[in-house]
Image 1 (cartoon, rainbow, N blue to C red):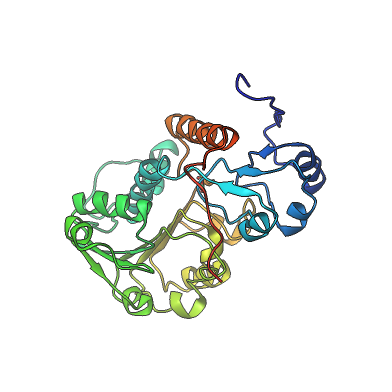
Image 2: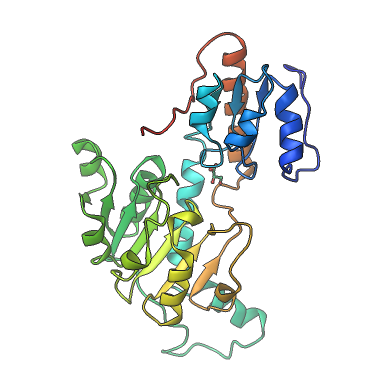
Length: 306
Ligand code: DGY
């Protein structure tokens, strides 16, 4: 507010499309979050002043970047600053689901702890297990570093193979074929962006390739997994469990997931730290300031190649 003439959405509730259109018609810079759906119809209604959409967040699947570019509107995001927090949360779910953390905590809270016994609350060991990371960008690599510390063997599928030094650092095995990797992993963790190419990347066919003893962790976007198929496989005992921070129809959560003991559900809080949010805000300001001063904003996002 010191730097610019700012109009805030003080309610902290997402605008509906009428609210978004009103905002987009009168500003030079729009700062949306992932809950604002800036599709091509909204962009078509942008005023001629609008020159920058500076997203407060990393993922830009809620913005039609190609439509923005066609109208001469730049788009930026906030990479890097969410990496470590999201990777921490991936590890938290990776430990919490197989080791039954929520179930154990509930035993205490509900007054049901009657003392230790050899078969009480048995879960599964992480050490020595194979972790398959889908999307080995910043977050995937940060997860790999942590998982090495937990004694897991790192495998990954990515559009491009990592540089040999980086692959060696995390002792990662590259799988060109996602199908082949899925069939051999104990834990799968998703860290790729949601794009038209990754929508239902984990389709029913692919989910069926997973071992029935394996776990699925998703902190990326719900749309990457066919959620109905996932639920069916969990109900049939064809997957050991899941840790989900994101949902296909977010914020709606399929009620069938709610009663599953082997599933931990979180409300899209993978990056939710005070430090991270402050860093994100600063990153937005850097982008807006650079742009308004006539420089290329550092975190410019380009449309996906067609
Ligand atoms: C993002 O910025 O895209 C994240 O999903 C927020 O947690």
